[in-house]
Amino acid sequence: MSTRGGKCEGGPGEKYLRRFYMAETTAYNREYKDTLFRAIFGKEDERSKKWRLNLYNALNDTNYTNPDDLELTTLENVICISMKNDLSFLVDSRMNLYEEQSTYNPNMPLRGLMYFSLLYQTRISEDKKDLYGSTLIKIPTPKYVVFYIGDRQADDITKLKLSDAFIVPDKSGDFEWTATMININEGHNDSLGKKCKPLYDYIRYISRIKKNLKAGMKSDNAISEALEWAIKENFLDGYLAEQKAEVEAMLLTEFNQENYDNNRREEGALQRAEEDAIELLKENIPAETIAKCVKLPLERVLELQKNINAKKVDSKKP
Image (tube, rainbow, N blue to C red; front, side, top):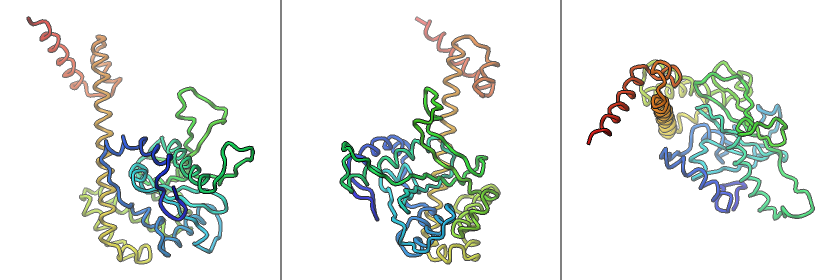
């Protein structure tokens, strides 16, 4: 199984993650191709290498000048389907993993832990290190950064902790993993955008699309109008003009998938609320109280109550 300078394929680590994520990827039927964020910062061409180095320097206040100092590692295929637009690389014995998210996800620390577990396993295997030996194995220092560009209100920087997910609270810090979520929406972390022009161009382009959508435009029109505007502004040094059709296809897939996921989440929340309401109705709790507790319209709770009563009548019939 090899990751250095290429794909992460094969081996027990990937097989384990494949099983872990297949349930989600199958349920949502995701077939993500490259996203724009990853196309900008996660390719092997010279322009992407330069942008990637620019992003790293902006995040870490460094001044590296050789793009080849970065060793790119990408997680693709099934893993990438679930963990879209991710890229990772090593600099000065640090392992950085960058990911862009358009929706807030409190499970990012757990996902990051699994990402790095696979990367460490691969690196140790390639270096032929013995985990059971008496010598301490030195590993690259991890850093997991999530660039957030969703609509939910968020601070400039949010530290998400793995311990927040523990069923039994543990404040000792003995078992911790952190995802640093950086809000890159317009009006947040402007200094970062000023340090990294490709990121700044990306933010402005995505923001234009979102403004178009809020104005009532359909996804394809919103993306197309924003793209024409970005091309005139020469965003990303002509990359958008050169890859116009590919960029439109990538963004249309992303925004359609985002809408689909949001609808599925809303449907799931509604289903859970109705299930809770039915259980409470069976306990003879007043419909008005239930409506407030589960945040359903009173009319819907009364309709559920009517259905329950009808079933009771049917069950008594000979």
